[in-house]
Image (cartoon, rainbow, N blue to C red; front, side, top):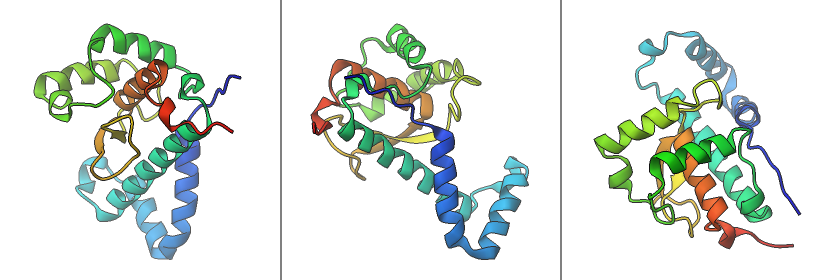
Length: 176
């Protein structure tokens, strides 16, 4: 059995937005509309925007983990660019240990630059390629405050693809 599922950023965004816009009320919806039309440089650290980002990131993480539990991770397809992302990851970071991520290592200035170059290869190919995404540090554990770090979307995809293909995420699959 092959389980091919694309994690659609648009679907996540739509469901998150629809779910939470109802909770914001009229003034909140207006504020979101104003923020979406504003110059990004003028936004600063708007608490509402940060809250909506956090909700979207958490929904994405929840959806990702549900996929790991319901489909054999070796068969999950996260994007239409999985093979290309994985190939570029292996070329650039082939020796990176992905079972337990060394956060200090992947966030060092040198490694950040290497990751930025890899991520930029998918600008225009992967929606929200550089959107802040929650990554589990230890592949054998669930998402939690202690087991999560923030990375660009393509970095998340590359590491999770490597985990899926090497069987590291299979421990979460609940066979029916």
